[in-house]
Image 1: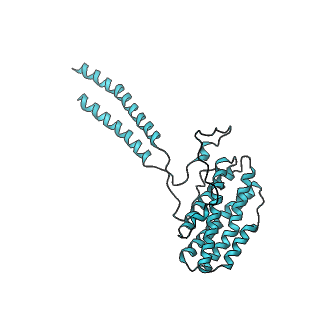
Image 2: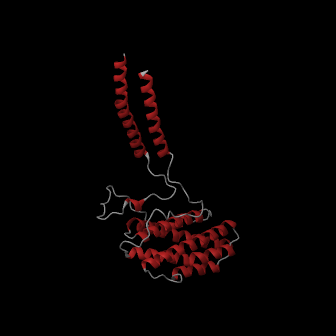
Image 3: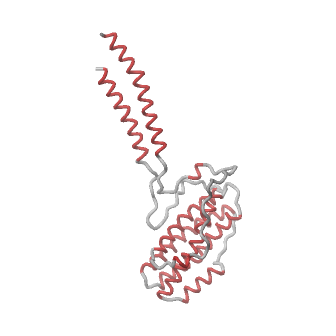
Amino acid sequence: MHANGSTGTWRRLFGTAAVAVAVILLSPVEAHAGPDVPVPPSDLISDDGEGAVSAADKDLVIKVRLAGLWEIPAGEMARQKSSDPRIRRIGREIAAQHEVLDTLDRAAARKLKVSLPNKPNSDQQRWLAEMRDADGADFDAVYIGRLRAAHGKIFPAIGTVRATTRNDTVRKLAQQANQFVATHLTLLESSGIVDFAGLQTSPNPAAPATTPPAIAANPVPAANTSALSGIMLPVAPVALLALAGGLAVGIFASQRFGGGRRRAYRRRW
């Protein structure tokens, strides 16, 4: 009688622990981003304008605005001038996404009191002129080439600001911009006409350091460094803790209650 009761208790306790582990393992962060339009995880990062704003932070806010000022009209030209349906779709998608990103950027600039430009810079105006003067396949090559090169340059800059800024509004904007730019890189490369050899105009990135950098005196709180939407959080350590906790409860319960049953069993017989 005692053996069967003890076995049943262990089965129930082990089953509870197993269920807890399964819930953890099968509950990663859900991916909300679609295949084309990124959905920034706005609920994971605060946006109070708190923290010092560096020159690099301000520069990023200005560059995001400048990107929209020339890539939106460039996308409109792609829709009108290209004979390739792929290029027309890419132009439409990138222009539409930059309108969303521009709205986010202007809101951040108001909060941070950063003055924004209202027209493209001289290089961007020249690129737009090149597109206006080109037709057919020549236009496609200029459009894809100019945008792919520009996105490739700003992508690492966004990552640097995201990793180093002390301001939560800049941090959020950098994460949003990073998701948009990554999507745009993929869209542009889906054209099949990116000249990757022509993009290799700068030295390769430096090899990673053999030792990790020193931690800053005021590191970013863990709550502000959550994983991006769609990336599964590490769960193995948590699962092991849950399993260990369940087993500990089982051992305690077995010793506490099983011992009592054994004593009662002896007194009865």
